[in-house]
Image (tube, helix red, strand yellow):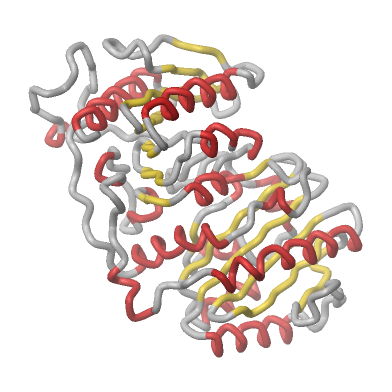
Length: 387
């Protein structure tokens, strides 16, 4: 069903089914007892439960998993939505700001007709970012999507097909962007498309009036087109050569049990992809200040910072930001790890623990405080032994 951006924003889940990051939190699934570590090097007093305390092997990607890795690369080519308008700060992974392939998920990013056109033309992967002025009931909102095809010619043909499919909708001129095909999707929502190299850029703006929505779309294209042209996509013939891990960050994470699309729930990415995923952009400062340049996401999340001092400061600042929200409260740290900070999060009805180990920071969370403590303890052991 075709849905305007306001409806998509209002109905989005707080956490995706793929275990995607929301504000530095991941849903934790315990490892089987067969994977539990027997190494004697676990720091004294820690209780990792049945989680492993050693690094894991990360296989080379194949098929769609390789395209998901490329999608996370594309996140670096997406503008942060608050650059369009400073009110647009709430969203993140709960509004599907992570890679997407063809299928049901694609229809939550673009109208059904567009999704069918993308699928017919073998859209390889998309990366989107969505924010509004409120998570559930936004008055203004913008979604920006970057969709990859095999060639510029195919992307141009896709744009032509979209333009043809929207002939019955009221056309909207986008100031400064004559090459953008835009239409009024519903009153107050303007949907625009442009082909740029092998990409189709989609911007959907929602506001009280079509004129304001069109201004959002124009500003987004002003910012997005230069970032897209500056980005170097991986050639189609080289996609399967993309590494399954980078600098061992993913090997340091606990494995998130998942479907065959393991790269959705076990992923590595950079700072910009992380910031697209966090719910509140007001929480971005600690990550930027700490110099986070690489993130590994599995059943727990690992962040590489500038140095040990930056990591320690990041833990304190992320904890302070979390506990400043109404209803959140501190809870007991794990046994043997008093420096870890654990918090009950009212909004997500879950627990989150965070700790640093050298230049690394790790977070682990879930509905059970015991699992969160055990997972963060296991991660601390892994990071301590693999600095």
